Length: 105
Length: 154
Image (cartoon, rainbow over all chains, first blue to last red; front, side, top):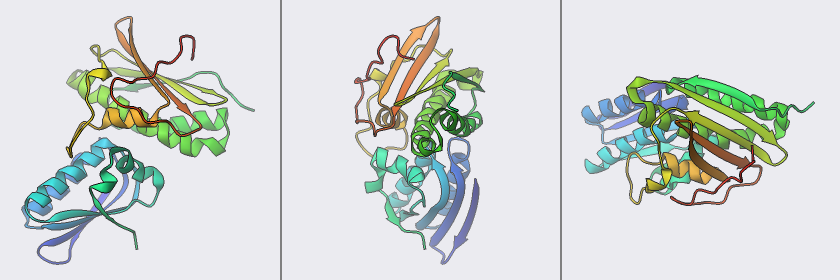
């Protein structure tokens, strides 16, 4: 998995993820999200368009980031994975109704 | 030619090694069913098996480590995978499904929803899980409603 991060303003950030978001790679994403929050980012977009697989460990990293940002008055939004396979974990756990999704450009 | 003999995979109990499961399943399904079923059935089975094996790695073996054995059997209606570990006995019926937004605790929920049969027993000091996947979409079940796979099934 590769993670790239950008910040469009002081408080708005974007994290782009590709490959597998699973139990092996989830700690890297969790650290990246924590780094953004610690730097004062309150609105964060995680772009999952190029992610090919997500399991519950990957989901946990996203939920953890979302909870912390919402506690601070912000939010974590997701760019929807391009494939139904990668989106499946959100549907199975009903997090498709919890996260705010946008379509990939 | 369709090959439907049982196919075995033995993994070291690490999260990284579970990445082999997807390509292994795809190969098993392609030779047993043909490529048309390998995509959807394989991806559903991959997610369920990765969840199960990660639970075994993290909550079963922990830092001690160990091995996980998987045997896949393809038939006309789908796929059955048996997973064997040497962890302490585990009863999934004791695990409640999350009722509110929480960070962890979704693994078994995912397995239950992806399988058409989900069974665990204790044999020779080992946990023996059997997961059934059919070509149709699975019905949804909750904790404690593990569907028994008939004795004698693969």
